[in-house]
Length: 291
Image (cartoon, rainbow, N blue to C red; front, top):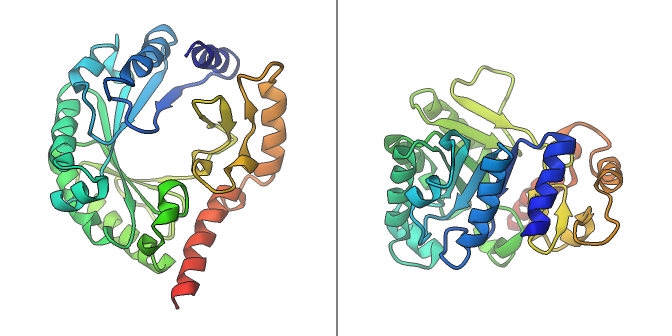
């Protein structure tokens, strides 16, 4: 943990780091939370930066206990991973009973304690029809933002090829329907790349999120490996994207990052980001295989 907090200090002092996201697994389990809490307290209270905690709503630590760590709760964001609007479907997806009920309860608690609350949904062929219902439900709770993105071949999804979407057109259609709904709700819609709708037109209550990997963000794994993009995690070829390891003696962030910048983002257009290209290619190749 000391190595991680030291790295956070370096990023704050040299590069004006603004935000830390605690993710991977379930950070609100009692066995995990002491380490999460140490990082949260250091980043938010000692360094004054924003902290986002990603959770599936399965945590054993109460939302209020998490919020109590913060001197300023405006520096706290909860992201809840909600991959189905239907209770039975979500419980089946998470392979655990009452996940849906727990997630909704914790979302409401987070809203009431004054934290910023967002929900993230990964869309696949089994839950794409629930996207609009999920958006309505989250809005009724008072969630601030709803972020939705398609599944692609990384991590555990590699073993679930039957869940991949059949075409980019499916993604385009659901994005268009969600955009229409966004104009009528208080919960903001966030669409990360790949964005398959026209972004030139005004879209009330919608934020398009372009890839900023290796420019303004990175991913630090627990073993010290540093990646230019969180999309790389779980990819079969993720080792190709490692910038370096912060635990290795002599690791020089500036030199390593400059090299990665030239390699991954030689062109500033998001279309040239290798992880985003891989994501779109995955969708298109699966569509061809199903044709």
